[in-house]
Image (tube, rainbow over all chains, first blue to last red; front, side, top):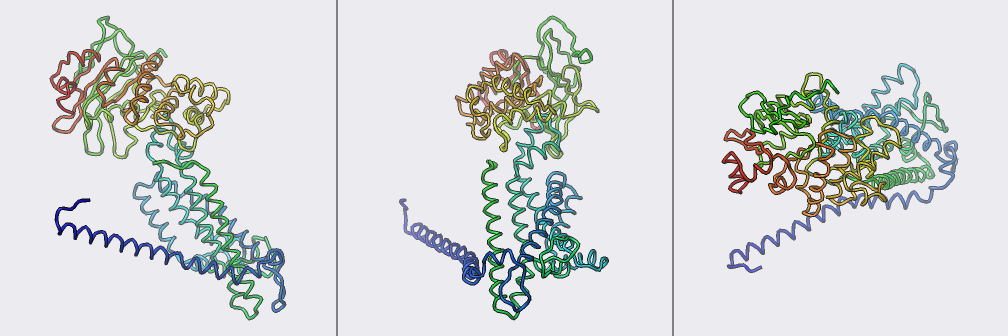
Length: 289
Length: 288
């Protein structure tokens, strides 16, 4: 590029310099954001891999102090409660998201959207306390279902808002195409808009799943914990996050190792889920804007 | 169908397609069958008055073109013909459109049933991205509640043949509709529309996103389709209107921004001997 005079030449040089500087700053920020993840995964692998044995997965805990045993109770409990929370929470959340996106462009929608946002900001321990008061106290019994419901409430606003966002991303031209074929609105939403937005909604579900799988606080006084493997929804049940807490803060070295192994297990689970989701979502045709 | 007799009186003097923009009663008489009778249609977006009091008769099994410069209300007008206009938030229309004598704006008229009989093809090809080619064509049939596999397959093939797409896709029916080229996608959308077997097919600038070769294919298709359907097209391309349409309506927005019908006549007349000087100015390229 030919620049006619020295002043504009200098301005051009300065712009190039600022551009390079800003690029470097952004790259540094991106690097900083990834460093914690790398450190965590590295630490988990170093400390947890040794104790991640088949026995950990298939045995119940030994009596405290006797090394060995596993955490089958915690794994089972987490799977049961997270699965149940998903089964209860996902339909309600997706329905709520559909309402917000399709019928929520009014005062009612604005109010509902605000309430959902408030719920999203609610501390998870408060939700646990609510379930304690609602279910545990009247029945004088800690139970798995109370924990699952607390997790479902945490999942609800996350999935509802992501569903809404994803539905609003579906181009209006697709809705119009369906209307022009004589489709009523509900059929358009069900057969055109929802399937088109599905990869995004599934991604949102998995995000919420990862979030609730790692929650310990709302389970403290709902599902309580259990030394033995249980699938009874009306009895106390164990969970990985709370067992990680009790083992990590306990007195025995083998507990500390098992706590690391459980943390690694949680991270691996979330990683696997994310990869599976990418595979599923990626196989569908995504919307070309 | 005897309750759907057109309200036109046969007269035997051929088409009188003079514009009737001043609120006078429809005076058009024709010995040809009418598909649509547009009666004093006005349309708004919120407070914006977009189309003002347009009346025109659309002959069955012909191609009618709506032309005019950008912002003249031609797209809005065509969207009032199958009640698509009101889909936009805040949009409303007044007046009547008679399909074979039945008012689609009558109090009890169901827009979804209206749209099954008056289909629409849009400016940008919009196949459903989650559906295969065959599923796209079958979409309207499924909306109608048709479940029979054999009937759907038969009508999909028929529609794809009618849209001159069958030979290009017959081995790829299970491939996604989005995998086709732009021109093929638009013909897929036409196939999807005619699979429902509407009486009228509205096309809102159907070629504006296509290359010249694909445009010619769609134009050929319009001529063929006019044997079985009534076509109304919006186009900003005057050559296209001249090539494919039997009648042309010229619209123009006044100083108040309201689009009105200026002249409506057989296409040849509009392009060779326009009655209104504004039409002449537009077709000779002096504005727009």
